[in-house]
Amino acid sequence: MNNNLMKKYPLAIFFVCIWMVFFTVVSLSACSEEKNGDIRVENTEIRSIGKIMAELRQTRDTAVYGKFKGMYPKESKDILNKAIKQLAELILSLHQGEVVPTETKDSSIANAYEAIKVFKATVRTEDEKAPAAELFVDGIDGNGYINFGVQPAYSSFGEADNQQFTVELWFKQAKPTNFGCILSTFYENSENRFGWMMNTWNGHLRMSYSLTSRGLIEPAKAYNVLNKWIHLAAVYNDKGVDGEMENGKPVFLKFYLNGEEVSRMVKPDGRSYVSNPLDNCPMIGFAGVTSDGKLFRRLSGYMKDIHIWNKTKTPTEIADIMNKKITVSGSEPDLVCGWSFDAEPRDSKKIIDLTKRYHASVEGSYEWREIKE
Image (cartoon, rainbow, N blue to C red; front, side):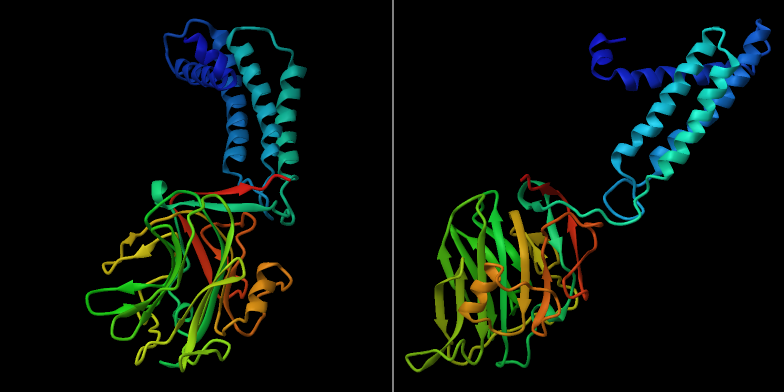
């Protein structure tokens, strides 16, 4: 056997050898050519001990390990591994014809059953508080994305030409790209555009709004920094944000970076926001959706403290939310949905939002990266 492998994986190779011996001996015990009657007795013992070892392994390998109620601490595996190793050594001794005292055999078997009992007693009876973590999603190289599901509430905020809403979140871009969706309900084909899309575009952070008659309006700010958290907020109101006017027209949208207003626009004549009416177009993080339902405009990075509101938030409210002076609980009447993404959840395929109404699923390549103090 390769000496390098022996050095690198000594325990794994030891167990492989034991099982090879075990199954070889079991096979030999069925053959009429067997010459040594003592081996028949030893094989019976080996088979019996092997069954106990198999029970230990099954208990270990079928248990669910994690930080939540009903799961086992990962270190609990060592309880069973020690018992498995003890039985494996016993089988090897028996196979080599050594005389093993009955007390030693009985003790090893008793220890095995006690190990199962002790292991099961370590099951968590309540969730362990998860350490702070950041969710990294690799959309560019790993096809990762977040699927928030199909919900009209994500993009529809009232009657046509009388809609208002705010989208705000923290974002950290990990890899450069010319065009990538941060968070999107946007959809377009040759005839129509629907919904909104927070995105990066040619070195800018941008919010894109679909308008009637296939229109599009996109407040943006140059920003091309990787691996640094930034807070984005986009505020829209068909009737005007904060009651402000410019040249006789309402300022109907504002765009903020880190609480500072970086772009504003007045409402074009005869145009208003168009929500996404489709029942098969989900809200997606780190990607967008094409007209035939495929994902594109992929992005790699981090996202946290996502909130969608069905009201326009004031500059003060945006700053207070950003600075945690306001704690978003999920019970706010104007909160449509929200996700913190600040600790690894029980199930990354079903992350319940703050309001308890919706859930998100992380797909493809992603990682919860624990934040070290």
